Image 1 (cartoon, helix red, strand yellow):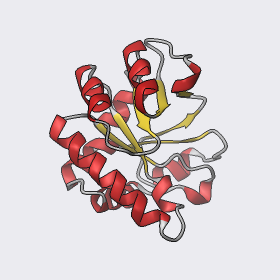
Image 2 (cartoon, helix red, strand yellow; image 1 turned 45 degrees about the vertical axis):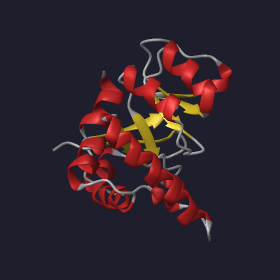
Image 3 (cartoon, helix red, strand yellow; image 1 turned 135 degrees about the vertical axis):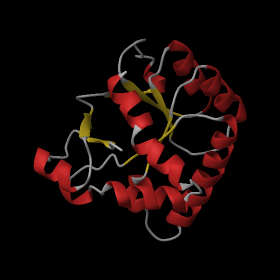
Length: 173
């Protein structure tokens, strides 16, 4: 299986590190793919992008043609998830949010993400796991990302698909 990741544009890495971490490709955002705030309204249909935000703003962004969606507050919004499902848009889980959370933030965040992941699986959404690492030292291997996804409630197949097929679709389709 070929695995793909998305990191922040401030993250400097080379092809050698990409291979050591087990990835076929790593994209920078913004750069190779854009990250757009749903509140800005600057969503271009057909552009490779991840739109972030929450609630009704994301519903509008999905309808405008978001490439993938990141629900930043990780709250379960059934109406939003139904719209995402109807439009066959992948849902992105940046695992760096968990990795760098401190104190009681981490278990709270994991609980929210787990509930969102569980409902998303029921709907059959495409689920993507990425790092969005901001530096080389914060990057994770594909195996580490799979294990973190499993902590959230993903099974092995979902975690691997989220790092391979779904991420490839976000980056190259």
